[in-house]
Image (cartoon, rainbow, N blue to C red; front, top):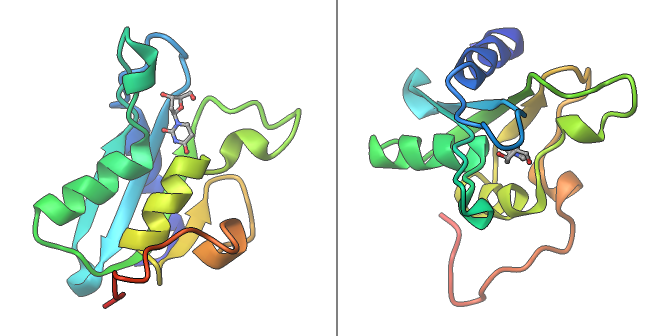
Length: 135
Ligand code: THU
């Protein structure tokens, strides 16, 4: 699976976003070992703090489908205003923490950016519990 294909799937997933409060649609596509793909979109709620990000929706879906070895993640913020800066394209802090624990080896592709990342670039010196061993 190529980077551009995974990004296309993330953009498609963003079309299924439920984001009536922010009008900011986000989609994510997760490539797992064995070429399995799970997708997710941001799902908002009138109680704003309950909004679910696309990356966490996609990672949850992969896990629920029994696919826990995540090789790559693509993120597409299709309503981002890229005239201003790249910041609206980037994963939020909570999703970075999720990726660190649940997809630590994943390559992270971001629609609109040439460069791809690994989580240690996006979340250096991150929190983890010593009692938890990475597999
Ligand atoms: N959002 C994501 O889905 N992923 C991110 O990494 C950044 C933010 C969503 C949450 C909310 O529904 C909307 O974008 C605006 O913050």
